[in-house]
Length: 76
Image (tube, rainbow, N blue to C red; front, side, top):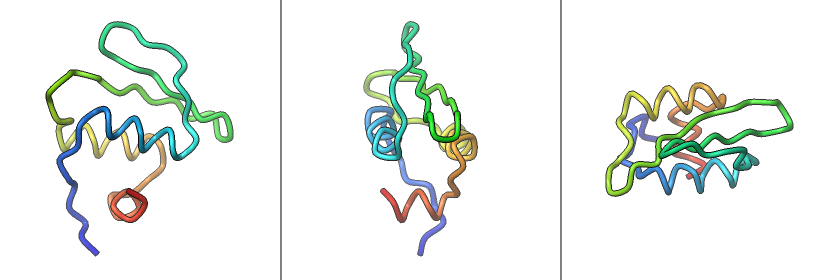
């Protein structure tokens, strides 16, 4: 299994997070905040159209929601 991070758009990342139980809480400008009530985790995703999420930011977001890169690749 690859431990590499894929290039992913914000739209696909938000879709993945929603499949994992996150719901939209609010949006301010181009930043969308999602929360999962089961463990009260909150994450903010920059939704800039036409651009991929940077690999460092993607790794930080995954860390904030409790997923490793391997888990993300497996669940995606």
